[in-house]
Length: 127
Image (cartoon, rainbow, N blue to C red; front, side):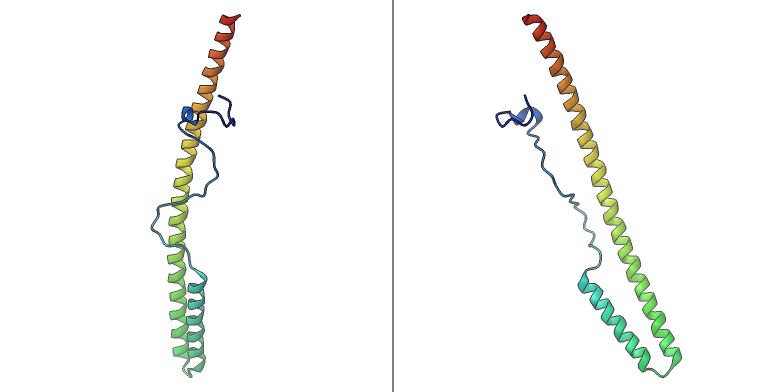
């Protein structure tokens, strides 16, 4: 078998053919914030800031800013957790794919060594 020939029977390698792929996870975690979510959050921040400017009470303004800061911190923390979960899932997929590729390479090397040995033995016997 010569790799790359169109006439080869791919079944010898279990039908393996190389094609680039994207890593896909079956994770049910939501992706990080979208532009629409960020615009919505920006609008809420803008409204809170306008309300705090209109207020004559410094205590109310401080409470609004504290509330805003707490909300932003919570949103950021939630997005960071989601991102970490996606990264962990991606790392696990990469680890599994690396193990599969390493196994395939090991099996291919073993096959080629056996092929070379058989070829050498048959060549000696034929001569």
